Image: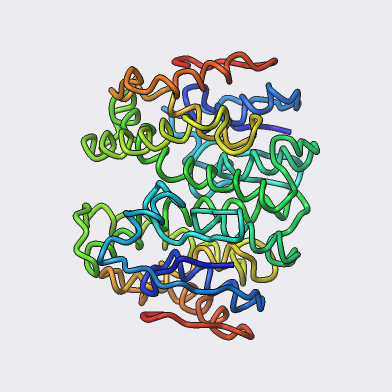
Length: 197
Length: 197
């Protein structure tokens, strides 16, 4: 099972983190991102979106980091992390949407501008980042983990770009509960860091 | 089971559409959106995000239209629409992320500007809309439905803001396969429209 990967990508890190926390074996295949390898064949054929990560497991090819977490948890029976019971599963799914939208377009986008020089609206990204970080800070007043009473793929999907927010000029100092939550994730057995986290 | 709803919201329509196609009984409770009812108690307590829809099923309260689709499909055993098998489930999950991000911030955002006067970057929304519509048009060259060989919650999550794209000044004329796919959804037994679709 190959993960076409960029080490500095928070989206790729979601998958590496979850695999590390759950002892799922994946072969990490570095992609020459700056050289545009993901925009050319064969990768663009595997993922016409032209984004990383891409998971290749025999005939199964998946784009989108959230979907890859769902796949790995399902394939390896990690129901603690991705429950099959509808209410619990939906509580996790809420945060997968948050990761795909508010986190990607908030702290994720701000970091793309500062770290990779991507031409996005930095002020709008920072505004979105501060909005979602305040909501998460409020949520963590009553919860140790995002979705359930234990870590789930929701935490793996949301944490990377939150922890990397300072690389986009968004400080985490105003969010003590978020910093404590990141600390709880870092304390999990098997935790694996990435540069900046 | 109550759906706190706004008739003109494509996100709310995702849920009404799926419930109609699968005969799931929901009580639709209209929210005074222009009066800001969703920003005040009791709704802001149910959903601190301050967004619609919100699903209330006894003690279970869910925000995020994608998560609500996951919940309803799971609770009512609609495994054709939201499979339990990991590969199929992940293929659907890819499109739930697409609905939450690219669709919301593309055609969804363009419509928010034109129809509701929300101050977003219209040119950026149109650029994102055209980018994702072209990707979907390419995908539909080889698929009748987005995720699997049958309709799933992926189609329910993505279709509304695609079909509503012209209300944000994004024409669907260049995308014949998308128009045919919308037609296939409209032809499903139980299909329910919304204004603009």
